[in-house]
Amino acid sequence: MATVENFTPLNLITDQTNDWKICIRVHINWRKTYWKNPNNASSLEMILVDQQGFKIRATTDKQAMTFFGDTFKEGEHFVLSNFRVGKHDDDVKLIQHEFKIHLTRTSIVRKSPAFVIERDVFRVVSYDDICQMWRSKSNDIVDVVGKLVEMHPIRVTRSKGVDTKSLEFQLKDNSGQKIRCALWNGHATHLHEYVSALDDAMKAKVVVFIHNCKVKEWDGAPQVSNLLWGTRVYINEAVAPIELYNSELAANQDNANVGDDNSTAISIGVNLTTNMDKFTKPTPYVLEEASLISEASTFVIRGTVLSIVETDGWYSYKCCICNNKVTKKFCVDTETVILDCVKCNEVEDVYPMIRLTLRLGDKTGNVDCVLFDSQLANMLNKSVNWLNTRAKNCEDPSIYPAEIQQLKHKKFAFIIKLTTKNLEFLNSGLTVNDVTDELEVLNALDDKLRVKEDEYLMLDSTPVSTTPVTLKVPKVEPLSDVEANNSSWTPSTVDNKRKSESPIEDGNSDTPVGGTARAIETLKIPRLEEF
Image (cartoon, rainbow, N blue to C red; front, side, top):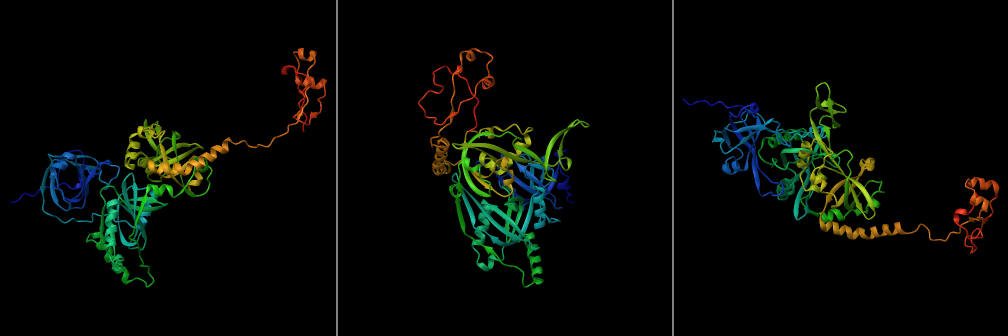
């Protein structure tokens, strides 16, 4: 008689022991690469799901990844044991499980018969859900599905010899609401090439399902975008969310009104944009000019980082519930440090808000510029996750990482986008929209701004007026010997003894003032009359 194995449901896995045995299916996997060396993988990452539909994150080190090779293919079923369990403390959590599995070369892995998962493993959200997540600054990872109703040309941005591709489009959910989306690099290419191969009739029937995406803000509105790792994009494929969407869409069309909008606006072109195009297209200003702008506009400045404006540090904490500022306070009752929100009082769930102010200088003057997470990450050639991790591990925001300190005395070009909203905060500095230190861009801006800088320097060195001015100088008489030797002499005593003479009308007279050449300290200073 065959022995029935007992497997632990994934939702019960903790780090209290490593004596677990689980039966799972590989939901998705990917190889995690180094930030500056994308061709070199550092680990194998997976999301595992059991028969009950519970999910958990799993990872291997580099040695175990090499040892297992291509064993863990998506959709394959396995029995796993002899693995370690640790805290799931990644910055981006694709699932909300508190713990994570660590597979090593000594872990026991064997194939398992396939099973049917008892519940839906996806988390499809609506447009209203996305808006709510955007308002609450939620970091949850979600899924979206909808009909492709609008697509812009794919944009290729070339910077430092590297091409970054992005594709903006809109999906319409079954409630008729449109969801703004953006895909990057491989995902952007995948969707663009798929749609490009279709005729016009089929382009109107494209349904896209994005599994594991994040909600971000773009131009003051919510937008969903793929993650660096772990996102899957399905187009007209036989996956549950697309099949459910199509069935609901068919039912809705049976009851649809004739006037319903089913139009699409899909463009399959390619827009190639380089940093040279991006930074030389807006109007360039010297810093003196930029400091005087008080209307909504987009322009470019360039300058050298003179200093870090050390006001409130380089980050602060915000409340995940209300998005207000959180400060650390010492609680006398519990003798512990608590996180205090101005609205919610004591809180636990917070996120770092990166904000750095730099003082830039050029030949005409200096201005303060404010950078947030993505702009500062670009300036440092780091990721936003790197910044957030450094902020979480830094107890004092007034202590600046060495990478930030090293920005001093370096030259950059900045795109400044003044909107009606950030015009209210001009006293804090100009808000940076994009930044680069490419030599080609800086040289082009130097050529454009050199004449302006020279004009400002000439203006500063030019006298206010070159017209000769005739001064009306009063006549001054010498003091008497008595007055000169009187140590108690003051101008007021002289005024009581003498009347001042009428002022000389011509200040160019060759006659010495006072009539005699005596030491200046012995001259009587009369009261000056108003001219």
